[in-house]
Length: 438
Image 1 (cartoon, rainbow, N blue to C red):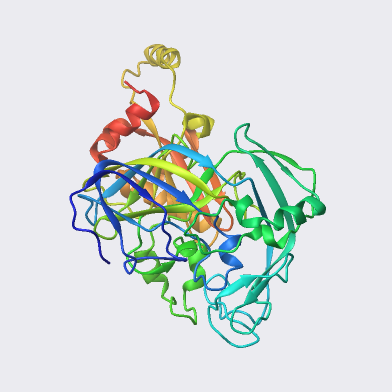
Image 2: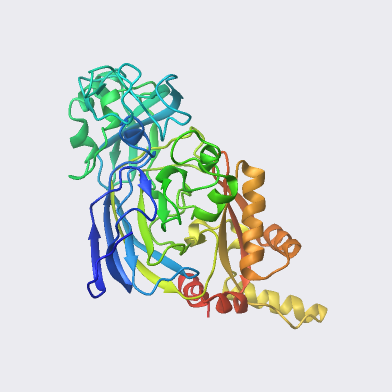
């Protein structure tokens, strides 16, 4: 890992990417000052890198950024100020693998079945599912197919979108990179080139968010596998990223969480597992409901602006999220002044004078499946707050919620946490400002 040795800067823009790998081997940009502003332009995640066999991960995330003052054992708070979709169209759908074109994991270890070249350079010839060709021998080389897919055009200004028919999809495929708005340094092929259009005429809201955002893991990982559910495929894997379960959990930072409330206005608090944190981001989605049910959503190019704050001595294993008020589950929303007055009156009627002040907090949990992810999120909440595990269960039941972020194993554990605990953690000021708690 290397960084520049210049003085920290207050503003930094990143338009360079890591070709699917995130970890200590990646050189960092910066340093960015504590409190500084970071702006990134990101190419689509998932399908573009998936059909580009040179990639060793399922995304194309930004080169990590060194944050001044961020040391291992600290945390960094990423306050997302602005998010904008720049693609005019994209394509997605349910995937299937092409057997015989990968070694253990088609996201990580692709090869050309015809000439045997590992991670071959490739190019696009024409349109359709046979368009991705090996530069070495010319054979069709993609390790992925759609079992059901769609092409969707986007109106970011009015936050609406519409799937199109085959004729329109073919026309868009002819200018795929332009319609995807691929950044200059992006290395992926545009998924629009495949032109799969099975469900025309479906109207959908747009609500952009980042599916992969956070800090650098303590060992090199495929960027899409920096999490416990996708990361399961690394355990005992036959390629160079194979590791044990203990090694995975020690290294990962759960940046790939596909949590649809990681959007403009939220604050994401991430663990620091390498010096300088190594903040990166990518995999913007135009929209997605809870769960990413199809396995993939509408990956787009986009621009994100955020500010970074170092939280000293906040040692966490995975992300903490301060969601927008509209995204909070109803039971975890702070009470209004009028509601709190009624609570005071209720307490007076029964002789309960002590009423705690609390604020919302969300712990991301991840695991091999939803049960494991839920237990992980609850345990993280107990470990960080110091509350007994069973008390976290009760609090999440009466003033919180468990919500699915992604199948098979990423969840949100949200509850109203006592403000003295949040103050002790060093994030009380963020919670007060975010939710206007006096």
